[in-house]
Length: 144
Image (cartoon, rainbow, N blue to C red; front, side, top):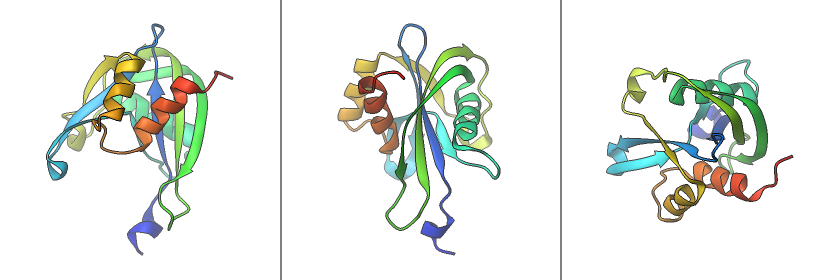
């Protein structure tokens, strides 16, 4: 099976607290020779809906749970696979401990204003494109 065929859907979350601050994670990525920002998210597990995946990844990577969820959009991961990335905004947050795997131990959670997060996105501080896209959509899309 090729890498494109093996791709699974993923979810990425813009978690915003009551003051509008955004939860961002950072870590060092040796293959890319630097520290980068990213939003909580990851691959869907068997039997999960996209929102279930988003809820799990947010809880595991950041320790955050949320009661208000909004789908921002779903987009192809690559042109050669049907896998999609589902972008969400989460609000009404409760913070707890991170539940990191051994490969995630250096994930650091910080809180940013939306303008600062968008500025970081426009200056290439994110490694993957889904995070900046989710930030832009959360900032411009009117709540439903």
